[in-house]
Image: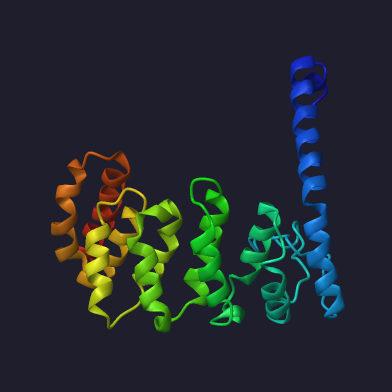
Length: 234
């Protein structure tokens, strides 16, 4: 560390990163405060709002103290009030739990539609990821609509993933078949097809896609073919 700190270029880069981090914190402070006040008013712990951990190594990284179940109605109330992307993403991620199923589905479907994949890709993905948890088969019509609309870009990934786990609706399989060569969601669509058709039929369908013009489709096809062939020899 002492050697690094003797390097003016490294010190300058470190200071620039820290300044940028402090600037982001300042920009987001009002919206974070809004959410925490709402949680405090409901008698819920707010200190760890927006802090997420994997759950691994709790002896090293303490787990956040947060009432995920109790926070659902509060977070739904403030979702449309926050404007900073980082804060909205924290709200969305906090709603992406089974406790919010299906109560958060309507608000998150609306947020997904109005969030630009081009301008806010991380937020769009976070909303789609939350939808994969909080939606039910009762939302299949809207999930199909979103999955088919390419304007939603790669943000559809987890919406397609969710569809791949909904059974009993022929439209789902038809949609997944249409999406296996869509570079933005090919990986998730192929996963759904493997679950539905089984490894042998899926492998035959995916083999031609190894030569697809888009590298993302080729990469997804190679990975899912590997998984299908592994399942076939068990």
